[in-house]
Image (cartoon, rainbow, N blue to C red; front, side, top):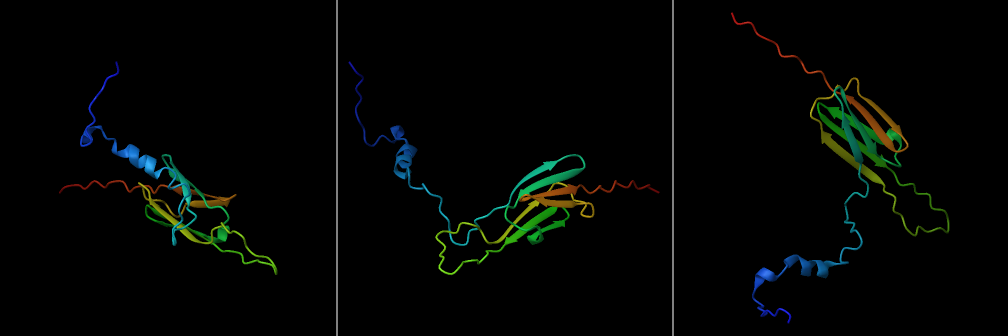
Length: 147
């Protein structure tokens, strides 16, 4: 004989509040929403560190190297890039869909150590910006003689 139990509709201990919500919202956010004013492009980066320097690889595809700007202020690094939309529509053509981003995108981050900006290097190839950011040698502590 199967186990029988009395159903109590007010027993909140047996209700899983998330299972009903999951079922209700299933398929609701199928497509990612694009909100007005949100940038479509982001600068994704990898940051590595060794004893002497930081190495940054930033993905900035479809941008000319003249349109990329990197600024170093102590341990604060800022990367910005700007792409321009080419308006090359021929007579009788119409644009059906345009998904390529045009505009300005920026990314800033803070490192644990100050960067020696005089020896920093930047290379841009195949849509990847590579930064080599040597660490600034910390001034050694000065010992004061007590008189």
